[in-house]
Image 1 (cartoon, rainbow, N blue to C red):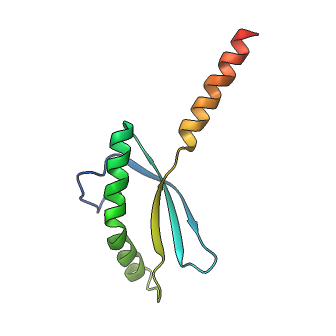
Image 2 (cartoon, one colour):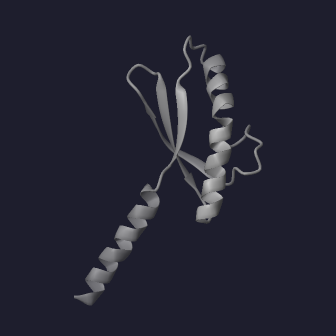
Length: 96
């Protein structure tokens, strides 16, 4: 849905990396990875936040849920952190 149906021009190359759903299914935290600069990431996140109502409604309709979960999009920085740690470890290893 994020890749094919959202037509907001602010949304760039976005990948959903994880969805954390609360035990009572009332909240969904959607972690997304966005390629680009910090400004492009912020714009994509703003576009996703703007489309959260549409996504919520569609999920409720398609899955035939009685209650729709509140959807929050969060930037996943896991890959960036892993690359940074890898770089630091490489520098440590080369200095020994």
